[in-house]
Amino acid sequence: MNQGMPVAADVELDLIAVGAHPDDVEIACGGTLAKLARKGYAVGIVDLTDGEPTPLSPGPDVRLEEARCAAEVLGVQTRINLNLPNRRLFDGFEARVALAKVFRRHRPKVVLGFGGKTVMASPDHYQAMLITDAAVFYSRLTKWDEHFDGLPPHTIQNQLSFPLALHGLDLPEASGFLVADMGSTLDVKLEAVRCYQTQFPASKVGIYKAVETMNRYHGLTAGYEAGELFLTYRSVGVDDLMRWASPAHART
Image 1 (cartoon, rainbow, N blue to C red):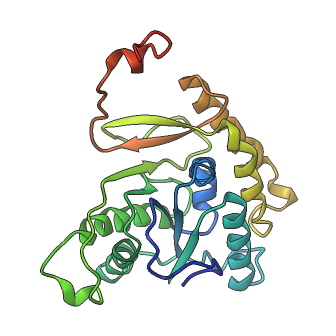
Image 2: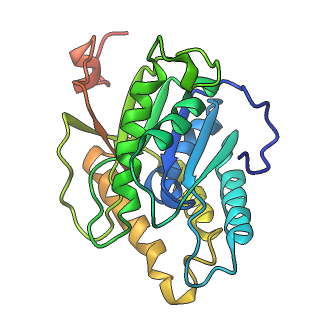
């Protein structure tokens, strides 16, 4: 379901980020989404579940309003909740098809999703990774029209994943890693996370410092004020090695 964002149902998006619950995407890659939106790209978020019940939330309506607030802060064009069951999210055919329909309808060039397990956190995260991987594949399949409400196949050009780990530096296995510069939108990201007052009350205020510290660490490794880490599943190439290795000295 669309969470109050005023866009046409079939609007094309440049990028879709997929989370298991409202707040996952904000914590993992909110700065990147905000920066892309400010550059004029059409960015969307898909939450597979409403994230409820949780201990301090009075109900789904409040959590959805927090998600709407966060999306507005980030500047994303649309946010969709698939209303799959929280705490009982499992990779299965119906979930894969539901997400693949979103991809076919909105036709993103790039999809961001979970990368790896989040041990001691919600197992929904890993299931969301499996569902996203499968939906990217299902989105492009032909001769299977009966499952997709007549939506035409769509091939996603690239898929990247985000690790959601604030308590360690171990990285999931991947073909490679890249850091997206989001120093200019770090404060915007933190503001979006603060929209989730039911999830991060005063007793959990340390989450903001943990997120900021991790982003500043990742940014430092790439020479940025702050950055967000992404996993790649194909080799990243360059057409001008000098421009990449020494941009100040590359020929224009």
